[in-house]
Image 1 (cartoon, rainbow, N blue to C red):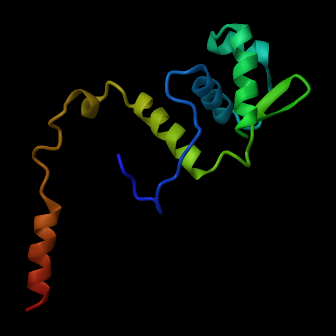
Image 2 (cartoon, one colour):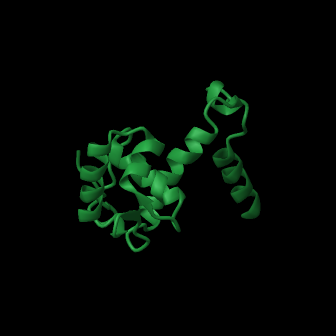
Length: 126
């Protein structure tokens, strides 16, 4: 599928439901803290061997950094684009199951503002 080349912004943010994404989201939600790989494995219920490999991959992409045994989000790589991807998922999870999530037709009775805008524009021209 073609994309608008000027506005396209590729990302190496790990796909949803992967260990990389889970680790990145956890570290991003605790940006001032450093965690040992074993702590991440326990907190996120990810096999310890997978955590080390995943952290190395995230470091290669510039998403995380480490000092000794402690790993943290890399604030230089955590740009607005990355934040928006993770933030949108967090918001979706927070409101999952609410009225708007459970009622697909919630917007059926909302006024069409584009029609109203057209009417207002023609009134101003008079």
